[in-house]
Length: 350
Image (cartoon, rainbow, N blue to C red; front, side, top):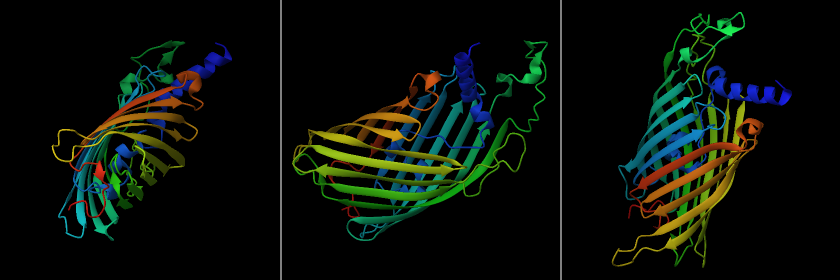
């Protein structure tokens, strides 16, 4: 085996076994604005009405025969609305991930609660917490170990001698965060002077739950610190809305920075009287995940619905094995508050 093939083999093997030996790092999605509860519990209820989102990601199919598949569904809503615009928010987030040859799976369910204060007609300040449970599991019989190589041949019936204490582990998880939202203007073809800004900060896995299959209480899921922000800036006299955004995540010595911009083209304005015409828009743009991948994103928005697609072009050292092919992602969002028309703000309940 030459050096090039050896490097390729080691890279693929590393990707396949990474989920088993990693000290714990959360999965990421590439469509930054479509996983609000995964980023920050303070975002529950910020949309003013009901919002439901489904995300699915398929990653590393070009590298592993068992690609990483990730599924996420979330729902949140505002309640106990006050005339001032202050209200409470509640949300539910469910996450499932299966990865690699070991079929290591992580499933979590979290309840999110937030309190949202209207500082004035345009500014909202939110604080939120989440609590829930997670389960981590894997199939050790899907893996082969050095102790099973006898006389240079693999004997899958031989014991692995691995000191496995658990094939499944359940743990509790808690976190908290803060967020700020500002909105003004109108997001329509005729006006298009809307300005919305959103930024937040959260700390997740505050309790640092034990995460090891080996019964090692020192191996815990590291706390994760998340800083995020996004905006929607209408270009007056044009049917264009600029949507820059960023996410910074720090967890257990790992750092992830993702930033970029989407451009929304307003295709059709809603009928003012008959309601027969529904507003629609086309979205195209990209995010760059530092030292990792370029995320190409496109989406179509129609009335209360948004469907998005993205593809990760791998730019890391894994390019040798992946040939720059990363992962495909799709999202579906449904809201009861229309994102077209008047920009959401503290008075959006009026």
